[in-house]
Length: 203
Image (tube, rainbow, N blue to C red; front, side):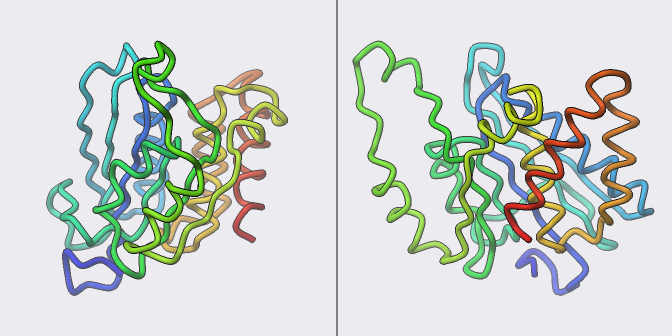
């Protein structure tokens, strides 16, 4: 599993996206679910202009010997990319055997929207990922979230995919209970549906 420690019970997750996509919420709910399973967990976050759509990175480390949130380059077991370019930004974090979960829905950076830069071709992004790991799983999480009832549930689609990898030691039941506790009321069913649709992308 992780290159940060010899303990095979450790899983290191890097989440990369844009401010407003729910990156921080995914990290938080992963941590809550891990704690509900009585696991030791550490969370770290790095974000600049998150409120303006800036790059956001979160790390979640789960394991008995985990003492800090830092994930060294080339050691992450899972890289969750909320957008193709944002996935590529953090690709150096993934281990050779690591798995990349990439939302294929494009969110154009401001520079691209203003015509000051060009967005790379999707095929070129995929080719740039291959030297780091062959384990790329991509799907349109935005479309799945909309089908579940809200585009804001995209992070729960990614949560479902993470849990379905069966690397975190977090059960499906615990994950769903955590969602229900975090999103009570009318958003509960939407987020559960989003979570389940994310799981189906792996199973």
